[in-house]
Length: 140
Image 1 (cartoon, rainbow, N blue to C red):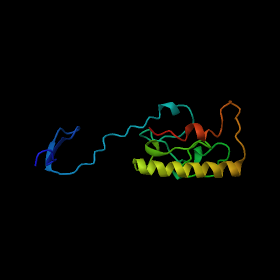
Image 2 (tube, one colour):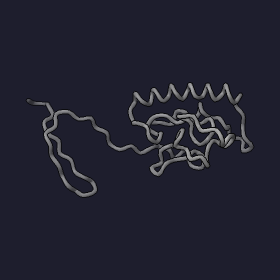
Image 3 (cartoon, one colour):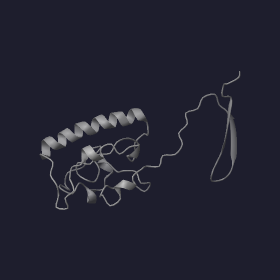
Image 4 (cartoon, helix red, strand yellow):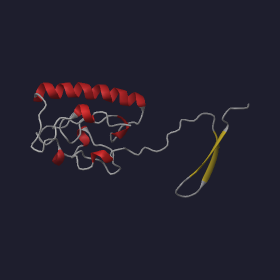
């Protein structure tokens, strides 16, 4: 049948080995390099592949600076009040639908954080210690 996928051939970029298989359906997922260079020197913890660490993945020694005893909320980063969602988040499933759900969770977490911790303030460096609205949408 013309115009229908029948076979796929691919090459391993490391070994050079080529493989061909009869395949009729493909879901293509190529690469996932996080765009996190803007976070350099921000205090937001990244994993070895430069994805943003959130929630329980944030090491206890770099928990949100204003209250190290408090664990970050599930979408919260190592910087108190800064949330990460979608592809940029370490451990995310890298799917649009999941990112939408994570965004809804981050909004609920932000509301809870503001209700428990009070209004937005600036730290001594003049940088907002709760910049969730500016940083919550880090994914591409």
